[in-house]
Length: 280
Image (cartoon, rainbow, N blue to C red):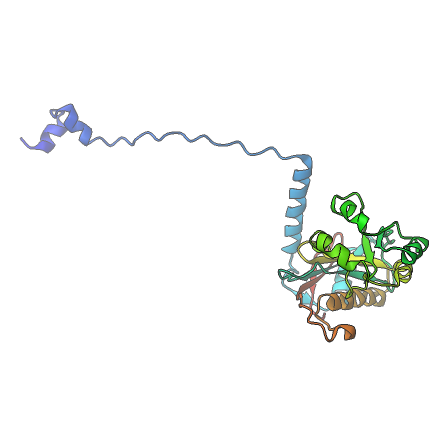
């Protein structure tokens, strides 16, 4: 009698039948981890990130316009909000080892009120007295170093006289350098004319890139004449190009300054899309 016949008629031994079993093995159940509970702050950050991605994927994402065209498109979108601001976003390549782009700007026409600078000055003797008279918030010598490192002395601008720069650099270079606050001769923040620098700060504002090398700045209002907005945009672009080495400053012609390439320039508004500017 054939094996197949015996199997079909149930005459095989149970151990033989087990060999022909078609039942699948039972898989061990894996414990599924519950998703982490996000705080309100984390949820808001996540929502903001999604909104930014959605905005970047607009119909204008890959389309370039001239500056004048972009201004007109955003003005049409914001027709019901004449006080809405134009925002300029300048993205840089930010190679490793390059300082965070930053600088001072005197706007041809200010789009928003300036915030007051908090100034710390490393100076001693007569220069320290001049700094205090000019309006510096914190003035002192090397004794201020520890307070800067541990965060007790907070400042938006730090100046230093040439005679003290060697004393503060070993300890503060790694702390202030990544934040773009380390005094340097190239930026003019290592100077004997501390009082003059402080007086110039009173009529200017600061622009600064974030840690990814992106600069954002309001450059005008919807009700402004187009020429005023264009003047502001050209002005800040010129300053950023000089600070990032894309335009050589005559006073730095003998210095080997690393170039931080500008990868994209975008003009946007509160309700409008981000439009890439092609004539920069």
